[in-house]
Image (cartoon, rainbow, N blue to C red; front, side, top):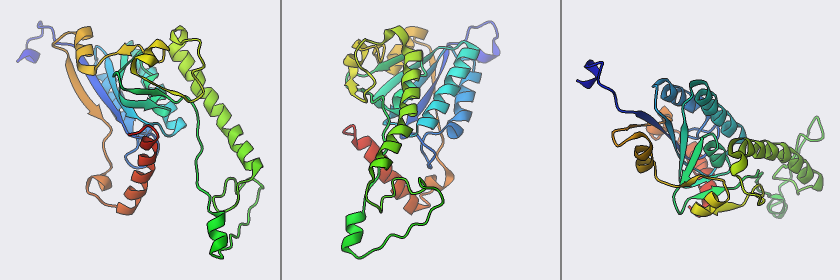
Length: 262
């Protein structure tokens, strides 16, 4: 009925975009393509603000950058404030996403940070030697077999991977500095350490301790309408199909969460 009476003021609208899980291009991971319709819709709703509910251990640097850039582009274009609320963790790419917000809020026990880049793999050369397995590799280009898990690690490969990681780390640092600016403490914040709750606030990585519903109501009124939104799961996953791939993806995701004791 209220919507039919034009002179009655509507309560403020706050879309809440849930950013839950790892970031990447795998099925069910947070990706720019998957989140684009959600983010675009949230900013089209003429909201008083947009809230991000973040619980992510990170993942792809490129997808983190694309998602954060989309949020900032729309927020700046429409002049809409963005608030990020960290649940268990916003680390690595998860913190990259949080920095897309104008303000970042955490729980006393939230884990924040890990501003770094990691390349991880496994090595099987001893296992193969014990079982008489021969690895045969033919490449065009000396770097084509970079970090082959079936060959012994080579110093030149390690240095190459460090060189590849450096510009990604630099882009991450630039993003954090651009978004957090003078709020950042003088301490070394970019060596991939993580911090908890209020400690992260003291360092300027976040703005304080607060939970989503009471904070949004304090800022936009008790009658503010909080509208939950999120990336939809793929059809195959919803029906439990493609089980083998789901198991592999779940194992990779579990390893990322386990780095933070979760």
